[in-house]
Length: 115
Image (tube, rainbow, N blue to C red; front, top):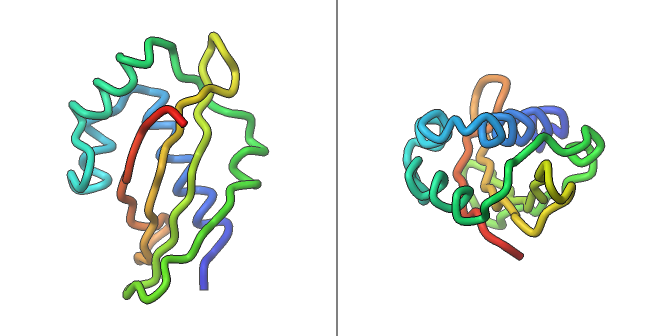
């Protein structure tokens, strides 16, 4: 059973790290699966705008999709990112969260791209 609070807290933490340009921390948190620190840094630099935290309500309204047949249980979501220049931007973070002990889910950044 997915914990909505744990899901929200995990995504919030991830976006905070991205806004703080903590690419090495993100790579460590996701154990280097899929996107490396350099790939994340490059995607943000190529977008050419300064990230900022989205309004808190964004984290309460995330669409959560279960990944059928995953063991342990896993979910994915898309998170719209915000910039100082634009507000809600075209940049989207695609995340997979997997059941894990502790206060946060295990994370894997699937993609960071313009939608």
